[in-house]
Image 1 (cartoon, rainbow, N blue to C red):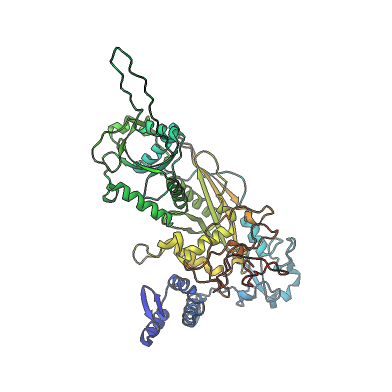
Image 2 (cartoon, rainbow, N blue to C red):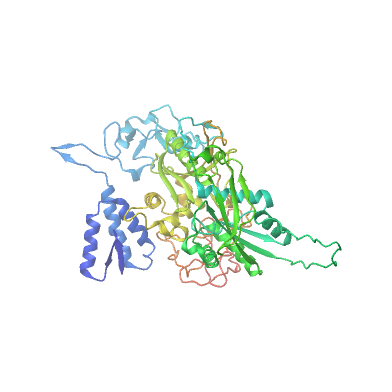
Length: 604
């Protein structure tokens, strides 16, 4: 079996290479390196004794690196990370916390007392005042709750509907993103003139804009907007010509693919062959290379193609005064002209005025709004005391916006996850359909990131030998989430709403910290549509989930959280038991949860 560690591949069947792998693990001093290797091997360990042995060896090395270090110098201990009794300084074992007899902590988890010292002060050991808790704690402070309830109440109490003005944030407004602004301005212009919305089919290096017209009215409206109305020659004869019936072509769906260029920018070598370029980018989008939004848009285009839709290719050249020039300072207009894309020569269409004054651009770049909102949210959360560890996002910026490590006890929530919503008009608090699943959404994205699958495939290669920030974050947090239930019990979930100043204004941003509602699919009202359409594969220890391969049938989110009131979690998906090819659940009698075909419980 071949195992890769620190960029080197070892063949375990070769004794010398196996010994070299053991030596490399023994001399490794970086925990993140071991985390990354373990994450990659964890899903190869099903039925493989070699991989399991290597994982166990790496975990032992990781434990040695993270073990509390006690260093002796001339007989004196100068570092000991273990918790100690505040009274007698006896070291305490964290795994015995909460047993009710070994040791107790104060409400803020800063002071501790061992069982022997607690027996001498029995009146100081009290039960938590929180309903249905009853945990014993050391009441050496004015608080009346245990450390678990105190920590949860502290963090959850920070979420309120109160808007906080962040006056110390300096907004670095982008000077001039020509390409981004040109696309947005032209899209908004077409929307205003024709009420047609563009369809997303790619990211960055793909097709800039796509519009689909249906029927003559929409087609003529878009063509007249870009090319201008068709002119009919006027007769100069003194006698009227014979009345003729003009044949009108009835058009169905037409797909308009548009490439936007600014000033004298030229098409790339691939873009010069417009038809081949468009076909290639649509195929890539259908393969999921550009994300979920582009996949959905490409599906719309494919459906139109199956109905016999034709293609029209347009090149839009936007004349935009460069930043700092006299034209820009004078507020010259931004105009655009349409040309045939992929054809040499030809005349342009009618000039289109996209913006009357070019210097009125402020927050046109939606990516800048999102990035600035996350930066403000990070500063705001750090001010509240959260230990921010970074986002869990793919290279297009989709995923979990921010994560934070919490000050915790061995049994209280350890992490916090944040979904940031930034806007310039008002506070945006609504969530997308998948985000409404709270911990299941976070588990889904973090699992895909740690396994480098689907939209997170490219996280492995990042600036040479450096580790992608998302990989470092998920490698750290996954040690605290060893089962799907941990995502619900060991984390807190919040929304951060950021309102940036109105365009042209200089008032300070405002921030709200709100609770992230529990999964909507676990409510009393069942959902008609699966909120997380891309199922995930998780190889938690002791589970029967298969290795993530393209040949394995889809696993529904129902396998992780059975619906308490019935509804969407109805066992209609493929069986997840390894080696079982059953793809449709058929209830058996009298065991309603057991599949009649394969005798497995698809969704428990």
